[in-house]
Image 1 (cartoon, rainbow, N blue to C red):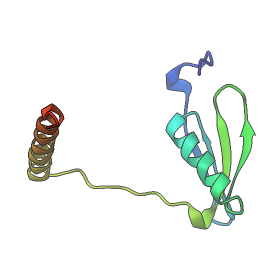
Image 2: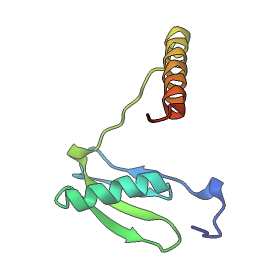
Image 3: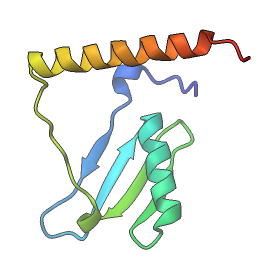
Length: 103
């Protein structure tokens, strides 16, 4: 969506306080907007769309008991190497399978 807003100004903001029962999320991020919209449709008692500024930004209100932040540790070099080897083998097998001709 072309909004006239520069990418560096397209923020995702999360507001909540320790005493409130809701978390407010305001975002321009397309993937996050799609995920939150789907969640709001599936669970309307826990999440709802509260604002659409028609410039590409949506605001959602989510029950604070449904919201969490997950931090992940960076991959070790060994894990990265093993993942690369596995995916290389998978891709090579897919390539071989796609060139097989039916009998």
